[in-house]
Each structure stands twice: as structure tokens, then as C-alpha cells.
Length: 322
Image (cartoon, rainbow, N blue to C red; front, side, top):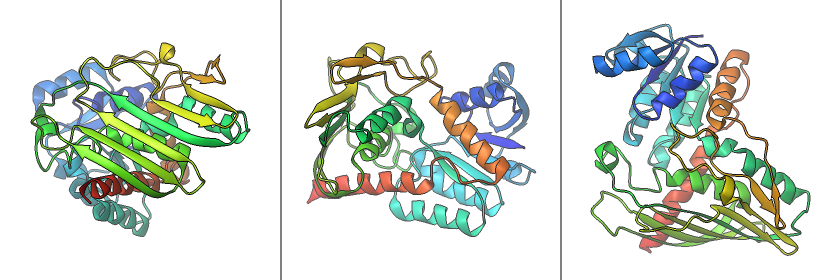
């Protein structure tokens, strides 16, 4: 199976790490010869394309796009038209209509299409959901998902047309995905999205959800939280117990440096630490996608899930402006 990775800088190296680990030689699209050389020294690279058009004319089975958000639709459409199965980093696209279009195009062409959302595959979230369904905390009534950090943005993340809107379209998508995986469909939400420093999009977002199953959700995400505390990034409260992330086992390093390749740490269930079986969530998502192409089976994360996430983010923006 032939694979072309577009974007070997930054998080693209995490994709290359998995392909090499799984034994795949991958072609890359990279115009910078020095960057291409570094990738070839570190990973199993079979070929370097200087432009995307040449890669699309190749015999590749899969195009893997690790490019700025604003390029997902245009480049994804070209890949599908070239009859390539498509893997694209989250978010699906910065807007709903183009996300729907990509899904429709892939379905009509009978091609596999998946959004690489590693938080969806996190073992702690899966274990927490399993224990909730088993009734270990009684009837859940509240889910809290939050993340805070303090960072200044450079490069494409501060360029209009590249990042989409702001932090919710970017890394905030991860945490919206976690919130909805716990809460399910929602009836209504109230939100407040704002920008407190010089950036093309928002840097802080807050929302309160009413879910169809009767639960309430609290969401907070910020890149402008000086001296932020280390607290659980997800909590589920029931009428007879609680589950939350164990911050003592939480991986804090950047993805490229962390030894524990999960989004979250272990969980605390009713006051007791529960070690969770860990695995590399990026390997889980990419390996699952490769298997779906090889066996012609459904992808492990349907793109409609990623579309659900971006629809929710759009609702948060609109509710904040009302």
C-alpha cells in the first residue's frame, strides 16, 4: 500500500513515526530540501515530491494531509478527485458546508475518508464511558471538560485563511470531541467566546450545554491563562459517584516528546485511582485507518463524528454572538 504524507514538519513527524513503526515506507511532499533530508534520516521515506500535483499523479493509495486547517478542503477535494483514500488532521474543515462536501465526495467515489482525531481513541475516555454505562457512579448529571494554557501563536496559526477562526477550530476541537463523547447530543447551549490579546481568532471560550439525556455540560478552553493550575481536564459527576482524570499520571510534554502517547492520564473512580491500559492513540487512529483501507472496512472514526464536532463549535460561535 502506497502512502503520501503532505506536511512532514511539526505533527507530521508523529504520523511518520507511526508509519515507520508499522513498517511502511512513505513518500512525502516537501519543498524544503533540508527538511526533506531530516525526515529521510529519521524515518522510512521512499520518495520526496516537491509539489502536491506530482503526488496526486502517483500510484498512491492514501493521501495523508497534515497541513493548516484552511487548506483541508481544497487539498482534500483534489485528493478525492485523484481517487485517493484520504486521512486529514483535525478539524475536518473550518466550516460545516465544506466538511459535508468532503464526506459526500468520498462516499460518492467509494473512498475511505477519516479525520485524525487522536482524543477520540483515548483509553481513559473509553474506560470512563464503560464504567458510566456499568452504573458505577449512578446516574450522571454533569460533565466538565476544560483545558487552559498560556501561549503565544506564531506561523500559520496566526494567519487568516490558514487557521480557520481561532482556538476552538484548532486544538479546542479535541476537547469538544471529548465533551460530546461523554454527553452525546445536546438540546441547547449558551456560550461566551472572546479575544484578550492580539490574535486572528479567539483565545478563550466558555459554554454551558443541556444534553438530550438530561445531563449538563460545562466547557472551558483558553490559551490565555497565566499561571494556570493543573486540574483534571474531564470530570463526570453522578448521583452516586464521580469519575475524573488523575492529574498525577497526566502526560504534560508536547506530543513529540511524551513517553505516554495518550491525551489524558488515568482515571479516579469514586475516589480510587484506576490504572488504565495505555496505548499509542496516534498509532490506534492511523493503524485503524490503514486497516480499513486494506480490508475495505468502515474507518474506526466515522467522519460524521468530526463533522459533529465542527457543527458544535459553529453553534458556540453563533450563541456567543447572539
